[in-house]
Length: 357
Image (cartoon, rainbow, N blue to C red; front, side, top):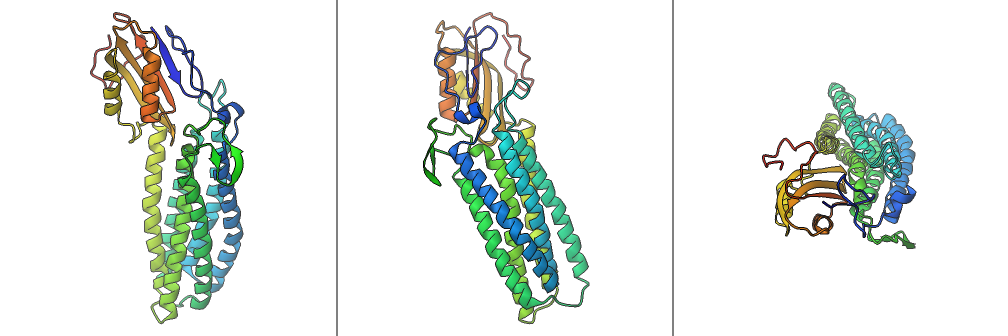
């Protein structure tokens, strides 16, 4: 029997041997450092963190002077952003640490954990915004619309710029060996092998915070204009309710996606039925069992499968592994090939109805 593992580490099952030409190990895993694409994301995240931290003091002071509930809510969320962005940056650093005998996949799950932390933080902030808004509905004194207008405009610019900077980093997360911010910097591995997109879930959590701030600033700006031109003072807390609703939807979606990663659910872009068809249809394969599909985090997907064959071709496992890797763009692929009548000691997949032998 022969087996093959494609990914960052070379691996051989019992009764199997590693291929002679295994995939190269990306330098980021060997050295535990950022690839050029990841370094660009980290720089963007650090820049946004500094920008948001500096503006928080200004917005909070302006919100207090303007006596605006929606601006205070936005400033409070900005403070949460500082914490969430810091956690996200720390999680990125943990995620690229090289594997150890204790953590054989490294610490990539730190990023979905950070994403859950961000989502819970947004939910807590949303509750605070709603409570403040309800209390403000009973206030008779309108906020100072002129000051509110100035601060909201500044907040919209700063938060919008920060969200754009981070979204641009997420959008360019698939690194093709070239750092746009540093033309002389090249990734000699050719591709990031999913490392850039591996930070997508974590960065999405940080981006969600910034989008919430941007929407909060926009709501504050609209409320300031309404009050400035003679509208009711209730426009201020009502605007905060709109922000809270948007934050609630976004945080619940992020919480769902990050939790599915931790529960090792098969990613939506890797349907198990489709993978089974590819494996079953590969020349020489007579049966498929123990198929498992999961992800360590966005961009770090894994597939393991046991196949039976009548063929004596010792390269079948290697060729099938390369087929799955190239077709599905999966980072970790493990194929175990079993000869006719050879028992398999692995525990069966309980969801499968196919025979084990």
